[in-house]
Length: 263
Image (cartoon, rainbow, N blue to C red; front, side, top):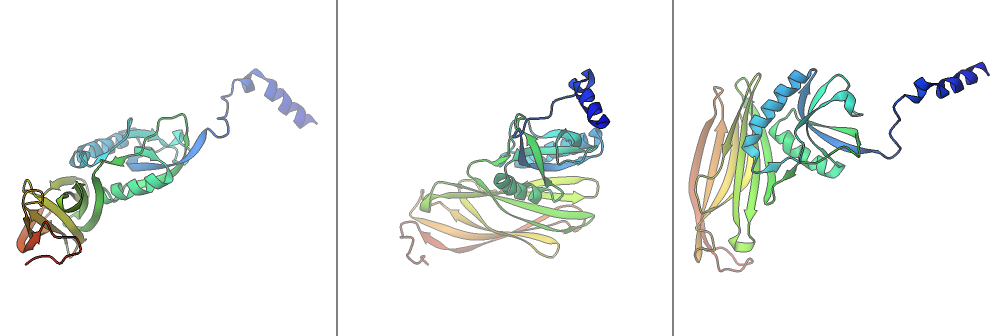
């Protein structure tokens, strides 16, 4: 009885009345947090954020973040994060969209991660998204002197059918122990359709295979098809690029899809 009396007295005391109210049931929702990295102090997290903003210029035409992101969140602010840490957050997503965008950021930065958290529904949240017309085409990672070479392929397509124009953008990151060098590679030609067929990692090198169609079918009755192979490596800590181009065949733009190609 004495214990019950003390509890009732405490609940009725001014001090108890001054305690912050617990959030109502249903105000928190399970969400996927996309994190680029972080640190134990805010200064460390700000350094990570600065690095992200510098590197993100390479894929700004391909990937968009939502309003208010990236941002630094202290771990104690969100249930599911570790108190005392600071995370660089790129977006707050539902499970499906979070899983898809996690593939993109993990391809760009192997240390990027996700965390399943409880997010206050009244707080702003936005999930990153691919720019319309673009999609993730794959990634590869190989050893390089002092670190690794990470390649992330993005594909684009405009139009439909035989007149569709393909394009691509390759983000190469030379990840060292203390620094990162980012390079963007695109088809150097203008006015052609260039389709990236495959990206793969070999022995200390990344290989990209593409097909070029010149001219495209909307400018002539026949198109000349070429194959080109790109090879990227960093044997001495600096990026080395090679390419080999060869003709494949001529394509009849007027042929039906089920007909065999020309010569």
